[in-house]
Every structure is written in structure tokens, then in C-alpha cells.
Amino acid sequence: MRKWIRDIWTAVVTNLMVTLIVALFEGFWSYAKERFHKYHGINKNNYPLYLKEMEFRFNNRYRNVYNLLFDICIRRCKISADFG
Image (cartoon, rainbow, N blue to C red; front, side):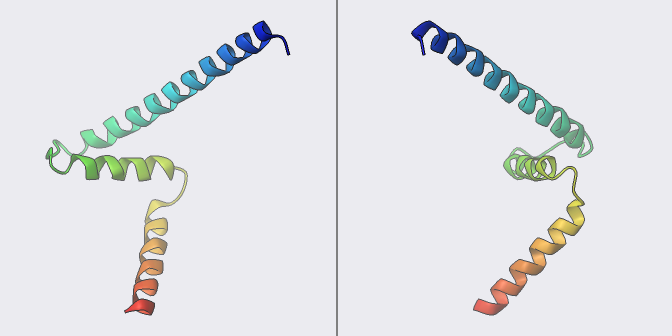
């Protein structure tokens, strides 16, 4: 492949990846801001935990989060009971 074609292709792919990453981040931040607004203020010490919760909810937004958390808790309790 000619160098100039490879360079153009690399630039196009890089631009698309950056656009996708920015769009995903904007989608996540829009989702998180809406959820954070419901808390009426967040303690800065707990902010990383709230952010992690938003990440989990965003990544599982098309699933029933309550059932998913229940399944996770049951599995972890069963595993810890097996080792305890």
C-alpha cells in the first residue's frame, strides 16, 4: 500500500475513533449529570463512588439493574459461603 494512502487511512480511522470516544463520553456525562441532579449535592469524598455507580448504571442501562445487582449479590454470597 502506498504511504500516502496509508497516511490518509490512518488519519480517517483516528478521527473516527476520537469522534466515537467523544460521543460516548458526552453520552455518559449527560446521563450522569441527570442522575447526579437527583441527589441534590454530592459529598466530594464520596464522588468517586457515585461516579462508579453511574458507570455501572450507564453500562447496564438497557438491563434491569435491580435484577442484575440481586444476581451479583447472590453469586458473591454463595462464593463467600463456599470459602467461609
